[in-house]
Image (cartoon, rainbow, N blue to C red; front, side):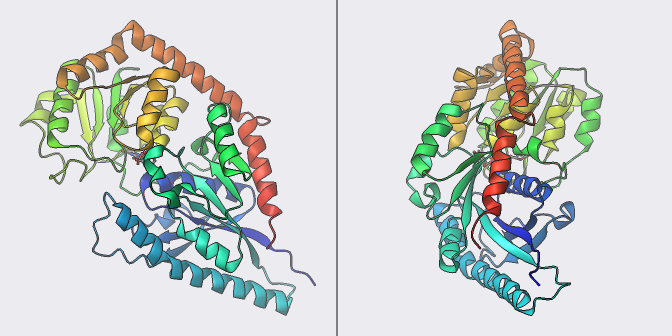
Length: 412
Ligand code: UDX
């Protein structure tokens, strides 16, 4: 008797927050569509298993012990790709052998699974080689739109022999750019975002511990009064920028919630470089935390603006909660995202100079000026377009149905 097997997908995330989050969200989306989901992850920044009881996990020996990966160099990325090849290949070979054994035994009560494909973050480009060797289909997840700055590393922009690409965006938001990329990659193309709204589960994908006490602080603030400040999970700034930002926020006289991630100020453990007595001086008007439950923060009625580095996840999360932005991009796609937000969508002000008076003025412009109100109007409209884009018969849902059918039809 032929065993009816549930299809499984193996996901390989790049082990940094801005990439782990969309990969786990994609896992939740596929799990809700009936797939069994296995996350093959590096030891470095391993996801918290207990937040995702619906997934299986496999840890790969990444050979990164003792290496400072907090801001990885290209060499680190290549080493990680090299080191993970054998662990992933051995694991997949074992899975395939088990599948074959079950097939041969043809046990009626066997509850086997059939590996349908491997989905990998484009930065984990070694997966293409492993999949090709084992004749397994692979699909690339692009967690953000590729930019010229990464083009010097062709391995990350090529999709090798992968049979499709998945994008955390919506056709309605970036149609012309997506058409252009589709023409370039020449494989089926599935924009099914925003993932955090398409995923059924709201379980945390945070690698760092979230400080939930900031929500109680937000509860005590007036509606639409707080500027939320966070530069994401990778960016580093110097102590001069920290000090200019501190005075800019203080002098704006607006309440603020500020995430200063440990290690994000070059040369310091945490926020030791803040002006002496800064937190005491600010008192209840400001709150500084090491890591926040960001999606909850942006959805809070007290939050009126987001001072951000414009990482792609932060960008989508802010638009989806109708929060206008102050853009302080630092590298890669952040620069282009900031240009789009400030000049094309016109839902953000870009900070050209990191100087306390400029920060003060920009925060006030966002929070209390007519121009700021215009940004708010436009971000509300933009959010409405995304909502329309997410209705059951719209592009992201249609693309998701197509993706499910595509994976199910892959030869195994
Ligand atoms: C990285 C790159 O820097 C970025 O350019 C690219 O677009 C994605 O990969 P990162 O810098 O971490 O990402 O930024 P972002 O994409 O915004 O992702 C950060 C994630 O961390 C968001 O999902 C955000 O909700 C979460 N976060 C951030 C928290 O949960 N708490 C925080 O305090 C700060």
